[in-house]
Image (cartoon, rainbow, N blue to C red):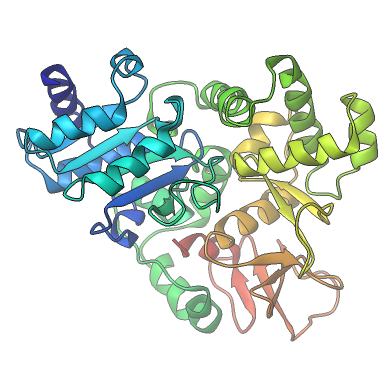
Length: 392
């Protein structure tokens, strides 16, 4: 265990997040079992280490970070390790890569039931179902989702300034005042193209080729977060990869499930299951009309964020596709997004209609909000698209 403490101290000492993630303040840190879910690459490990750095001194052995990729945990069970940790005065155990350990949910449930003075905070893939009624953690764990950077967080990184978050209702009612205040400090439009290309995933800060890194991360999502966790045989992985490419080439659009089943040589039911797996892995988003959901075919399918469009498409990405993908991605974190009836793009929370674009096409509709790219400020129901990146 001493070597694990040394690793913990080294990692915490060398963790220095350039901005503080909003989720850090949203979590109730008094809960005894906390799960941090998120797609690969969004910074879950750094999030755990930052929590340790903010709340415990470097030599305080009440808190310990462990990664279950460590070969030590091929012979040491979580529950035995946790019990020993408590006997040494440990109080907060930070567990990374938990899904790599067999029967991890059962062992965490055992710790929860039998070690009442121990708090466990763990990370898991976005694919894992922590709240499933059949899970041993169903009534024990409190889970949160860590997402990639919002446009607001990206701006903080790029400008060194801090900006407030706003609710959707604040933006709809006060967007002129809010956008005027922000635009008086920076020029948000100057950063939109960079955010579309590489701003969602924290590893753009690393001194490596972002596109190559993202492609590697996407393949790991398919190989581990989709295939491994869902127990899909490796020989079917090429079908998953091809399906993701076909989906990206046609997004946003209504998925032609029959054609996809022919293209990847599998059944329609399997295609729909694969799409659901890709959605759970935060690679795609499925857009349904109100009161419809999986297993029905979605009305439209989007990639999960604009960065993925550049990684999968070998040609220039259409601006309209980027704008719609950005809006969906930023809004659906805290609000329900559906396909809108009529000519609008989105229905939010069952009451707000939105059109997204760089201009108003056709006659102005007073019942619709317009999220318009390329403007710093709007008026009435015309709102700058970039401002929806300040929802978190």
